[in-house]
Amino acid sequence: MNLPPNPFGNDSGNDIDIADLRKLTDLIKSKYNYDFKDYAMSSFKRRIKRLLDIYKFKNVDKLISVLETNPDFFEEFISEITVNVTEMFRDPLFWKILKEQILPNILLQHETINIWHAGCSSGEEVFSMAIVLQEMGILGKAKLVASDLDTAIIKKAQGGTYSMKSMDLNRKNYQRYGGVHSLDNYFKEMGGEAIMDKSLMQNVSFRRHDLVQGAVFSKFDLILCRNVMIYFNQTLQNTVLGRLHESLFKYGYLAIGSKESLIWCEIANKFIVVNNEEKIYKKVKE
Image (tube, rainbow, N blue to C red; front, side, top):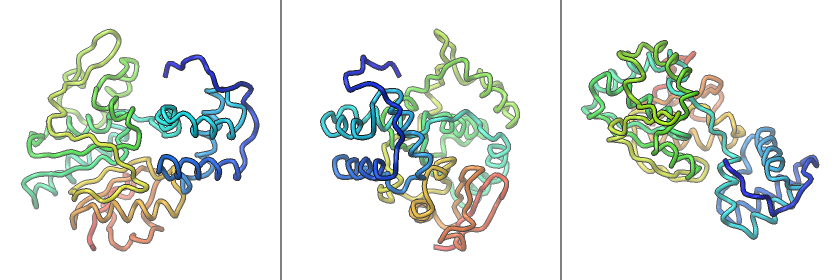
């Protein structure tokens, strides 16, 4: 992000206590109707500290003051506070299992496939899925919804433009997954950037959606919500997992992050484990 000259203050560095964070989350909830109170506190605190350093705010009170008086700043706040670190074909074995087991099993029951990327970030996961579907010859049978809390990151995902520096890792992941071609078949290099083939997005709908407070809006055969819930506390994880369960067709699949789990959650008995290492589950009860 290119930051303008900072008009808000200097000398950040004061520590942040729980009372500061509570005042901040209360302000955000009352003014902007975003609820951060059940985010994992240690992670949320780190992100706020980073934001204070970036903008040279002296303390959380200064941040609160800016958010109260400058609504335009709130979009920048959301972009900084949400975590948008991703890559194409992250965890290549996961994508191999999707291609060889999960997607074919869905097509045994349905003529079309409805997929939700919940927390799509900058879109690398969505393009990965589109490439898998294309190479299976079923992209035309699929409808994908890609959602995120951050409107700026959704625009980046829609644009499908990534630094060429990131493509080396993406190429290696694609090869390890077992891609049919070369990843280079799916983008053009221009000015040091990789511009993804827009035809891959022909059946993708991007939308802003809040996993914390957003309503169930459709039913899906497969939901990917990977490496999102590690930033939530247990209460919020239960809430979000309940919403994801409700958004799946019976016998639909849920994929979460490798460091996440359904074992302890309230709806654990409504799923069976398909692959424990890659954290893929199947809904078996309403």
